[in-house]
Image (cartoon, rainbow, N blue to C red; front, side, top):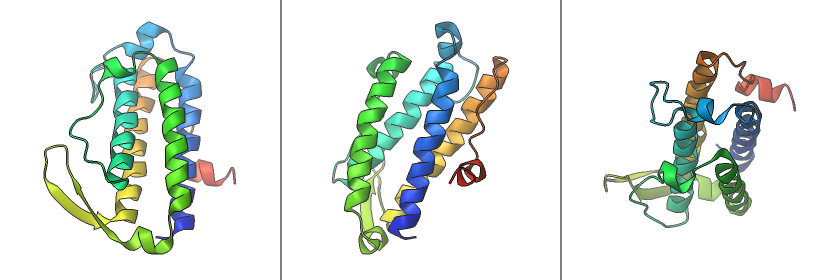
Length: 164
């Protein structure tokens, strides 16, 4: 995996997030926060907070931090607040991406899980995981949108490639 490939994955992640958020913004507050029995309490809201929180944690790890917990729903009480937090995170991610080289991507990087367990993987694998993790949970949100009777955005990777 090289810098160009990682940048493309993160561009996809930003695009997919924007597409899905445009649909989510049309929901009522009750729909947005309804617990639909999925992975996280708080329904779509809780799942979005989880995706955002995981991205924050991984970026912190890559910059030398060692977070010990995911942010909670209380830190992002509304979609508007969360969208602002995500915009700030994207700026940090973009700066980090610009600083990368192919060599840095290949280097092993040790991090601690939220349980305090150490792991070492090449940076590119960690970064690829983050996009995959977000894609997985966006898929859950797609299902929740359908449960609410809302047509989800088409956010498959191939759909993104067709926009290029």
